[in-house]
Amino acid sequence: MSYKNFPMVPRVIFGRGSFNQLNELLAPKRLSINAPFIYLIDDVFKNNTWLLSRISLAYDDRIIFVSADEEPKTAQVDTLVEDIILKDKEQPSGIIGIGGGTLLDLAKAVSIMLTNNGETKDYQGWDLVKNPAIYHVGIPTISGTGAEVSRTTVLTGPERKLGINSDYTPFDQVVLDSELTKEVPKDQWFYTGMDCYIHCIESLTGTYLNAFSESYGKMALDLCKEIFLEGNLSEVEAQEKLMMASWHGGMSIAYSQVGIAHAMSYGLSYLLGTKHGVGNCIVFDHLEAFYPEGVKLFKQMKAKHKVTLPQGICADLNDREYDIMIDVALSLEPLWENAIGKNWKKIITREKLRTLYQKM
Ligand code: NAD
Ligand code: ZN
Image 1 (tube, protein in one colour):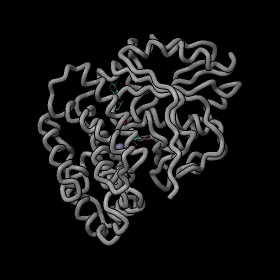
Image 2 (cartoon, helix red, strand yellow; image 1 turned 45 degrees about the horizontal axis):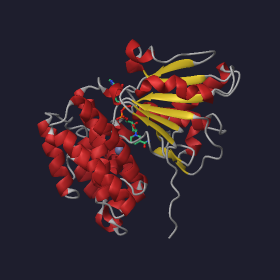
Image 3 (cartoon, protein in one colour; image 1 turned 90 degrees about the horizontal axis):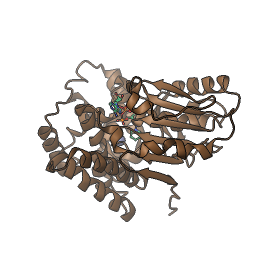
C-alpha cells in the first residue's frame, strides 16, 4: 500500500473583511514592474465597486472579467494564457482568481499553463504537470465546491471532463472572507452548498474512507446540518460556517473520493452543460437506493428552502446521447469503486444508469 503525499494550501487568511488585506499580501510577491498581477474575476462583479475599489492595480496589473455561465473549458484556458503571454513583457507575478469554483479552477489552470508547454487538454489527468505553476491566489465568493483547497482543477476538454490533478494545482494563498458571499442568489447558494453536503455523504459512506477523511467529513456534515436544516444561525454565521464546511468537505474528499452523484453529474455536464452544483442535486435526488440517509436529509433541506430542481432534462435524449452520458459516468472508475467497492462492475450496469438518467 502506498499512501498519497497530499499537498495543502500553505497559507490562508480567514475573516470577515480579510479581503482588505489582499494588497499587502501581494506586494512582497511582485517579481518586477514588468511582471504584473493578473486578476481573473467573475463578471458578476463587473460593476461592483464595493469589491473592485479594494483592488489596487499598479504597473501592468490588470483585471480580466470572465463569465461563470459555463464551466471552464481547456480551450478557454489556452486563450487566456496566450493573451497573457502576448500582452506582458515578463511572466506575471501571480494569478488571482476571484469567484466561485469556475473562476478558481480557471485561475489554477492558467497559472499551471503559463509554465508548462503544449495545450491544456494534454494535462487532464493525474500528475502530468512537469513544472511548478506561477504564484496563484484563490478568493472564493460562493461556498461549497472545495475548489479553494483541492488538488484539482476541473476542465471540460474536447474528449473529456477531467481535472488537472497535480501537486502544483493547489493555491499558494487563499483568502476566506465570507462577506464576499453575501449576495449569492438563493438557488445558487443551495446548489453549491449541496455540492459540499454531497461531498460529505459520498466521502463518509465510501469504501475509501479513513480517519483523515472521516474527521473532516464529519465536521463539514455537522456544519451543513446547522446551516441548511437547523436554521438558527444569523446570516453572517451561516456564511462563515458554510465557508468552513466547503473547506473541510474539500479536505475530506482529498484523501478519499467522491461517488455516484459526481460520476453521473459529470455525464450530464459533458452532454448537456448542466452545471456542477445543480447537476449534483438533480442526480442525488434519485440516489436513495445508494445513499438512503443522505438523500432523506437532502429532501428535507430542499423542502425547507423551497428549492425546486429542474425536471425532465433527459426527456428528449436519444440512445446515442444516453450512451455518451453513461460512458462518461462509467469512465470515472475510482468514484464507483469508492461508492460500491471493488466489485462495482457487477452491480452497476448500463441499463441501471439509463433507468436513473431517464428519471432526471
Ligand atoms: P460558479 O463559479 O460556477 O458560479 C455559479 C454562479 O454564481 C455564477 O452565476 C456566478 O456568477 C455566481 N456567483 C458567484 N459568486 C457570487 C456572488 N458573490 N454574488 C453573486 N453571484 C455569484 O459556482 P460553483 O458552484 O462555486 O463552481 C462550480 C464549478 O466548480 C464547476 O465548474 C465545477 O466543475 C467546479 N468544481 C471544482 C472543484 C475542484 O476541486 N477544483 C470541486 C467541485 C467543483
Ligand atoms: Zn463536487
